[in-house]
Length: 244
Length: 244
DNA sequence: CGTATCCTTGAAGGACTTCAAATGTTGTGG
DNA sequence: CCACAACATTTGAAGTCCTTCAAGGATACG
Image (tube, rainbow over all chains, first blue to last red; front, top):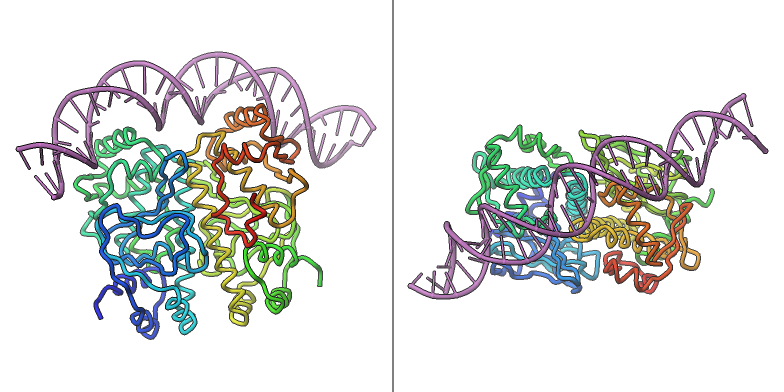
C-alpha cells in the first residue's frame, strides 16, 4: 500500500487528536488514486457522488458558476483535505471541485467512510469537526468579502493560506506555494483581475509580501496580520502555536 | 414537558428522515428555556460554550465584529434551528449569536446532545447534515457577496428566507415574517444602509416584493427567483417541492 | 519558436460609500 | 393615552473604490 493516505493523517492531526488505533483504521481506507490535470474537475455541480476526494498532492479549489457565467471560488484546498466530504451526508453537490494545479487525489467510497466512522466513532467526530472548520473558513471568507477592502481582503487570504500550509508542514521559512493566477485570485475574492493586479502591486510596494512563480513569501508577518486583522481562531488548529 | 422542542422536530423533518424512535429520543432532551430580549447575545465570540442554543420562537442571527468596529452578519436563523450546534465539536466560538427579535430559546447541554447522538446515531447523522447545510448556506452567501450586484443579492436573500420559512410552515400565502432593519440587512449583504434603502425601493418599484413592518410579501416569485438566479439545491430540503 | 496564457498599464465610467439632515415610526413612562 | 425619546427610513450630494474595455508586454509550454 502506497503512502497516499499520510497527507490526510497529517491533516487530521493538525485539527485534533488521532489515536494510534484511529490512525491504523484510517490507513486501511481503500483509495482509488488518480492524477488530475490542471483545471480538471474532480466533481461537478449537481452530481450525486458516491465517493469523496482526498487531495494527496497539489492544490484544488471549489467553485460555483452562475447561469450568467460569473465564477465564484469558494475555497482552496491543500494536501490532506477532503474537499467534498460533505457529500457523505448531502446527496447532490451544490458546487464543483477542480484541480488548481496538476495534482494527485485518492477517491474514497462513501461506504468505506461510513464503515470507518461506525468502527471508530472518534474518527467520525474528527471528520465532523473537519467539516465544521470548513464552515468556519466560509464564515471568515464572508467577513472578508463584506467588510474588507481589497488589500485587507487579499492579505487575509494570504495569512490563512500560509497558516494552513504551515500546520501541515508545507512551508519553508516564510514562504509557501500558492499557485494561483490573478484571475483565480479575483474570482476568489470577488474582484476583477485588473484590481487584483493593482492591489498586489500595492502589497508588494509596502514590503509585506513577495508573490511570483506561484510562491508566496511573507516579508513582514506582524504588519500583514495587522493589516488583514487576521485572527486564526476560526481555523481551530490543534496546536495554535503554528498560527503565530 | 412543554412543546418547545416541536420546532426542532419540524426543522429536522424538513431536512431529512426522522423515525418515530428518533423523535422520541429528541423529545427527551432537557431544555433550559430562556426569553431573550431583542439584540441580546446568546453566545459570545471567543467563549467556550457547554451548551447549544435551540431557537424556539423568533429570529436570531450570527455575526462577527472586526477590531475596526465593522459588523458582518453571517446567517439568519428561524425556529427549530440550532445556530451554534458547531460548538459541539469546536471548543471556542469564532463569532457571536444574537436575538434579532425578542425570542425564546432552549439551551441544550452538550453532554445531553452527545448522549443522544450515541444512543441514536441516525439523529447524529441528521445533526451533522444540518451543519453541512449550514455550510451550504454560507457558500451561497459567498457567491452572492462576490458575484451579485445589490438588487440580485438582496433578492437572493429574500428567496432563501422565504423558502426556509415555508419549509417549516411559517409562511402565509406569499408572505413571511422578516423582521430585519435596513441596517441589519446591510450588515448581512455587505452594503451601506443607504444603498440597501435605495435597492429596496428599486425592488418595490419593480413590483417584485413588498416589505414593511417586518413582513415580506413576494409579489412575483418567478421574476424574483430569476433576478436572483436562485437555485434552492443548496438548502438540501427533504421535500424539494416547497422550494418552487 | 510560435501560440496561448498570464501579467501589466491606461483611461473612462459606474456601483456603492460617506456625510448630513429630514421624516417617519415605535415603544415607554408619566 | 399622550409626549417624548430612541430608533428606523428616506433623501440629496459629493467622492471613492472598483469595473470594464482595450491593448501591450512578459512568460510558459509543446
